[in-house]
Image 1 (tube, one colour):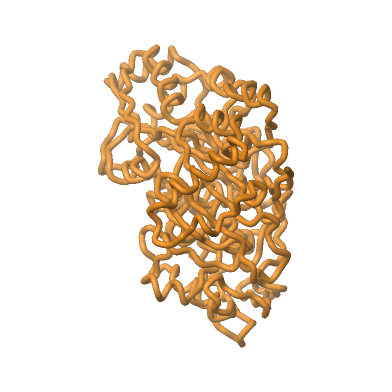
Image 2 (cartoon, one colour):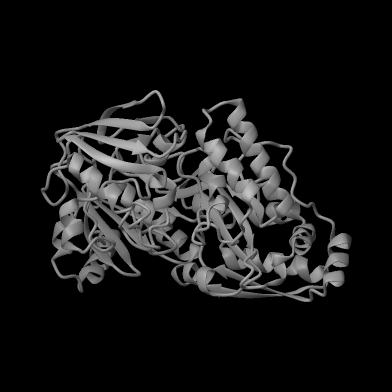
Length: 518
């Protein structure tokens, strides 16, 4: 037996020794039957209604399915669990005809009642605060009606152009087994049960999540038996694991390690990313931080040479974000201008306002929108602020802790990002039309902005809708509750014998068709 095979088997045995059932026995001794993917952080959970992080999204996208899905190479909506649908002339009623040959991983049947239960649990009157996507996906739903076993009707309070794209997303929209929801008290974060090509096997916290092929899947079966999502926080450690053959694919790769990856004979996937890396400036009146003042927010933006920062930190693997929208999304406008680099003016404003210190908080590991990690980025901004006479502190937390700190701690500047879910401008810009601090991390409320976003939701795709989103971006830039930094390329490193991973335009990876050669 080769050293590599011995290593893999011993690592698996160690990882699963504490599980409540024999997960190791389900894994194949043949390395081609196991795909190992590594990223920097554990998922926050595995219930699509209760999570909103990329690491969870990558896993649940292989466990669950929704009524519809986004095509991998564009934002077109195509069938998934729904075979077809019709929309009433007034745009208020969507009627879905469902597949009748689908089973959940627990053996229960998928039907219209399952769809109703999944939506009803996320309606505004019952949704919990942790259901951060519930409002975005189902906020305009008035009621869900079961017409027959395989027909379901969704009636909206108002017409919504992005509705179909929203129910194609990986958060809130995927359908969970009602049997599992009942068994686990409406929370399947640790007991996910969907209809997808892979089913959940084990989660060793801080180490890995293991999925195995769902043999009763209604469509073409997954090509590889087992899918293992490993958590390796350090980028250098992920690269070593990849180059040693311990994993097959690594995400969270930055420009500094690409040469090392290629020298070892491994490959790099480098695609435009549907994401925005940005700074959130605290506009919460209750916190009463310096950034409550718009002029101070402008001065922060003027302090940073964003072109220089992006070029030096990302070495060509990210583009400067001139607005919150990536340039290829309809509604983007090159006319949007945030306060530009002007350190002299910035220093004058800080001195006039008496601002000598700022508090910054950030995350430790790499994120999809920021592969170098939050600490490196925050320290670069810290250096720019020092040049204009402002001493900025930096507090760094692991991702799960950081998400809570964004809600509970006082800060002037937080580093965060957004991964687009469906290619619609509303999916980006509606964040700041929400009073939900999980999405609107700046706690910024502007009624003109909110009204503009709400109007954009009801206007059909086209020039008029695009103009409304341009207007919204102009308001965002003028008020500056956020400062866009960059749009990261979607970079992953993988072994040359790994084939046919779906690198989806929404930034997630799907493994149903993936396989390894010997």
